[in-house]
Image (tube, helix red, strand yellow):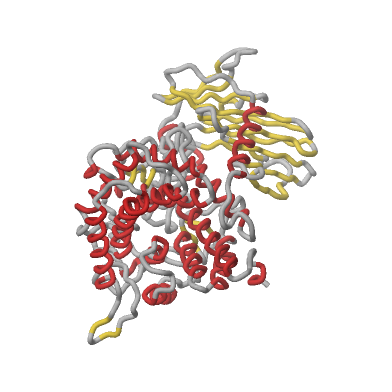
Length: 592
């Protein structure tokens, strides 16, 4: 629970440590009636999370969690609703600012009838005020504990509100009004969407994924974060633990494409405004990622006081990849902004000049090696995916001039674009040697025979058709090398120079990319089969993290992951289009 925004220090950090590092539990006590079942679900197309506890004695109680929208506040609402019987829940509150390292001063404030009455915890710049219609929890050492009792039809509301400690606390809210307004906001937003997969077997999964992408968008700034968490490990007990609570230009651009495909042009306008503010200045200073508000200083450091999720250390905040050069990023940005133009978003006086400046950067760095889409911490290479995205950036610049009448040196961009294409086809394909036959596939980087799942994106940006011979050979190589358990690995870590210990699990976005490739190259049946398997990997409320442990049967990495959800949307759209072409508007014939 990072307050007041995605990349703020956590106040509840038990996920990466112990309960002493901060948590807020409302649940049946261990010495009470046994729990028969626990069920969670979002209320319709919203992010009001309802957890239902069913007890052995017949008691049933709901806990509804919600972060209200539209009021520029940082509140967490927890509403306890009695469904049947008489139920007593235990409440335990441990607030620890600074990722579990700062014990606040906690005291009761206000008197009877005082709107600011509650439990106030403050330390340094942070303060949180706990208000409730029930009884406030009481101190027990460094923990605050209490009981919440409800009978059928009774409601107890508790609200935790963050605010700067040097200011007065915000006014108490009308919980019912805020819950209803937030529920309505999400439902209305979801109802605005359309697109290829708006109906059919995957419609519900698509809507939930679009909702996730919107929820990962900061309400004030329009910045889109890659995930809501830090340091959830890619390998149990391993060191591949990163902070994803920042705005990667790549991930945000790909998110934007998915939203645009489903009619969300206003989000495109908001993100373009964020982009203009974030990268303003000298194009030579452009970064691959920024803070939610566009800040550039994101130093990576380790939190030694936290033992990590399941013992996976180090726990990191910030991200050292901010220092890398990743040549693909501006390609994704230019592709997304081209999609925005095609969706009807007009250029303003700043947006096209900004894109021209980005293209100047692409031109001046067009012969430079990079760290690639996977942020390799080894030697820079000419990664084929990166080279193709250089091509894509130049191609979209040419299109803007030729098709939209915008100003720019289209001939210069065109010549360089074609040179990059020829170069990729010459050096980025495994053509073999006199001593060794080649596989005819695209490769991870120049000078290697290894393949990389990012190559599945080449048809997505129009570099080749999905059924191009080199692309079909690439799919065959990926199926041979990167599909050990039927899901796609990013690359073979044991054969890479990523600068980290080998070993990784399948990357969910890559598997959705393969679904899209199947759908677009005449293998819709295989695409549907893989899609159905992937959807079964979602958690109980439809969320996806970064990777999946096939043998352990659980998700891994930061969550919810924008890249996984946007790739799901793309895959569903591609299958819907394939079914439409084949006269199967809903895919049911394939399922039978």
